[in-house]
Amino acid sequence: MSRPGPASPSGADQLPVIEPFLVRPRSAAVLDQVDGIFFEASGTKTFSSPLERAAFHDRWLGRYLAHDAQHAFLAFAGANDEVAGYLVGSLDDPAQSPRFDDLAYFRKLAAFTARYPANLHVNLAPEWRGRGLGQLLVDAFCRHAARAGTRGVHVFTGRGMRNVRFYQAAGFREVAATEWNGREIVMLARDLT
Image (tube, rainbow, N blue to C red; front, side, top):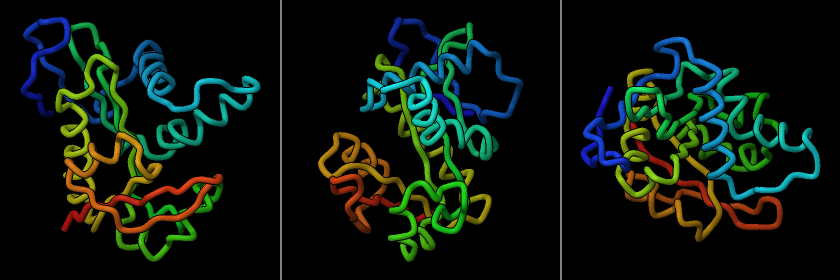
């Protein structure tokens, strides 16, 4: 577990604690907070149906918790299990894993995902952004992936998105780009060996 340097937004001296998702049973309230952070941080805010909303959730969060919870991390602030942020990821090369077949860009860039197979998604509650907590979650995941023998980790994001600077500050660099859903996305990667 690690603790970031900045004080919590409420001014309390309790700092967020980062722990593996599976270190203890997770309550429905904790999972609801993770879902709340996920949807608040998402660029997609409206859905045509509950089914479309559920599919979106499964694509970017649910599949990771269902298949890769052993690689997820939570950041807790305060004594009441207030979730400050989370990171979900996979150590499997997504170009080789059927559960990622719905994201065609993985196969298009299979040469790069083979070199940087682990992938992650990190999101924070709004009051915790810009305070170093995201970096600590990414570092926790990268240490975990390196201990498992993974050579590298990657993320995909839109060209020019604000999170590009965050990932660059976390040691990622652009290694590839492609078109997806009518826009350019970039693959940012970080060596773990």
